[in-house]
Amino acid sequence: MHLVKSVRLLVITIATLMSFAVPRAAFSQVAIGVSVNFAPPELPVYEQPICPGEGYIWTPGYWAWDDEDGDYYWVPGTWVLAPEPGFLWTPGYWGWGGSAFIFHEGYWGPSVGFYGGINYGYGYFGHGYEGGRWDGGRFYYNRAVNNVNVTVIHNVYETRVTNVNVTRVSYNGPNGGINERPRPDEEAAARQRHLPPVPVQHQHIQAARTDRELRASENRGKPPIAATQRPGTFTGGAVVPAKEGGRYNPPPNRGGRNESGATNNSNRPENNANRAPNANRPPNTNRPESNANRPNYVHPNDLPKANRPDRPPSAGNSKSDQKYQQQQDKMYQKQDQERQRLQQKQDQEHQRMTQQKANPSRQPQVEQKQQQMEQRHQQQTQQMQQKHQQQQQKMEQRQQPRQQAPPHQNQQKPPNDKHP
Image (cartoon, rainbow, N blue to C red):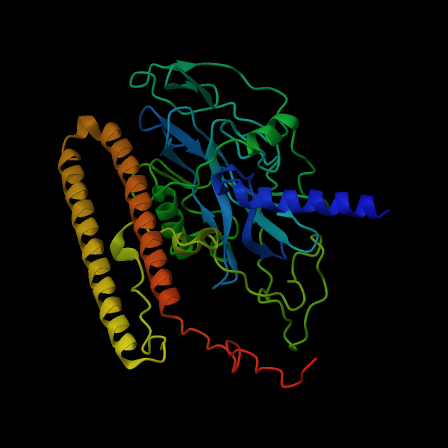
């Protein structure tokens, strides 16, 4: 019995250590802190805008949640350049977690993983992706399910998709949801290398969140901007409105309490008019600055200012404290200079990219380069931030006051007066 307990403890310990050793990008599609106790609206019906150029992958629209307003809002579908050749998009989805609806963020990877069995359309019919495939570093579009101009994009094929379960339900789970589970190939895809949504996708989400017309309580499930040709572009001829919308009546007590102030007691998905009892308002994961509880700072100017303590830790020695204060000021000054240099370098790259945009014939290539540039800027900024944080921690550790030894710890014992 003791041996069995020891083996179980060892297995748990190894599994725990492995969870810290595996890179974050290798994890499967995970919930990211947003939970709501009434279901999102049905998916609206809309036409897909024409593909703007080669290398663009369709990312379907979905309902996101803004906790400040206690309301769902529509993130329009849009075409996004793949971050790497060979990468495909796995859409995010809402799933019933037993006590609330939980959002699972989408990601980029070499294979399409599980997205709740949701039929988003245009190649995303519940499992896998039928909208195209990579071959020799080029993406070939299935024109049977995508809106592609074949006079501009020649790498196309046509494969009809049959036996599609036509439904507009927007969440996975029982009691009216999509009752699907991951298939073996989708579970394998979840273990592959992943990339999070690229910066233009975060900007696209932010633009949707700030547009009042995209609130479900405003459009009643029929958003006036259902899809766009390019991320963040919500005006012009490339914007597509919804043709049909789901019936949606927002609950009057979205904050989780009824008019009398009593807490609601309904946590089941079939009662979508109530929030869970004592439900904490979750953070808005769709903002770039709080996605997955980790800020996505792209440029040094986006970083918060260093948290400089008013009273640095004292080592109990005035000269030592003064020396530490000087070293700390010098460190912060050097870090500020590094921020400014990196910001200037990135600003110069932005200027050169703006000049290249002046040539309309190179627009698709320039947009791809711009996306890659923003990803590089984000990586540079995060590496610098991590470096600065490590420098501050090391300095604080060196200044921690040394604990004094207890009295008589190092004194020799008095001689024994007694003779044997």
